Length: 292
Image (cartoon, rainbow, N blue to C red; front, side):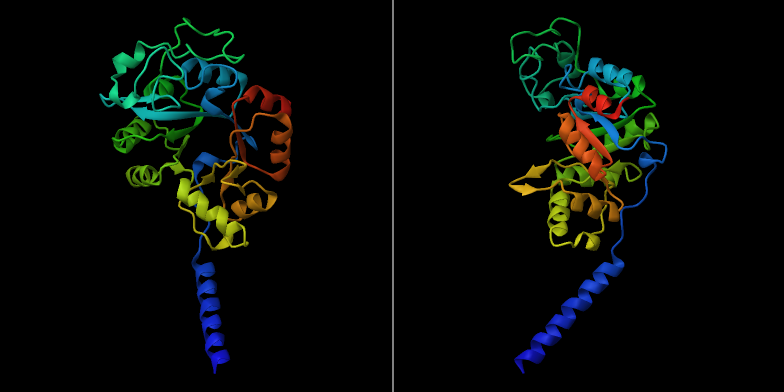
């Protein structure tokens, strides 16, 4: 009798799995990942924070001149509602000022030296101090690089930036040239609602679910609402980047773009695994690996 009950339960479970597999869908195609792109993409993290002050116009211009495929950056909102770029929530680590970006106005931020604390030799020298490098606005970057693809991470803020951010993307016709990322699921969810035509990568919880599903080879049961997986090599003691993970992501039509890879050996290994892009502080090294 018990065997019959467990047999029926097993059949129900198998039936449910079959149904989920049948109705599951891969990620939708998006023009951001068009066929004319280099493969894999060289994605300059903060414009190349390993070789010049990150998230600055100086870095973005140098990265573009170098020939990278994608500029990566981080967006915040100021007290007076302007979208600006900086990696941290506060200005303390990289500038000659102090304070949280969200509590400061654009005018206050523009007075700071964004190259003040960047050092190539662990604080022995600061070659970019006093060179007129300032904190850029998102609009300035769109104006300066209208033809560049960009990965833009929405950082942690108390005030939502989804509406003004989407309006700015549409104003400069960047809908097919930007990929929006965030570790914060709610912020990415509200952005997708506000700007559904723009490509996004996975948020933290979405990434975790997909990674865990791939371990027992169940990635094909997942229906992603995003277009790429921007992931570390490992997280929380769990190895993320493996050839099997890349294969599972591609089966769901997801691009794989690991971060932050700064040595040539690892770059080559990931290229051999078939990743779609590499996020790096050293785009100069990756250009060398590619012979570009």
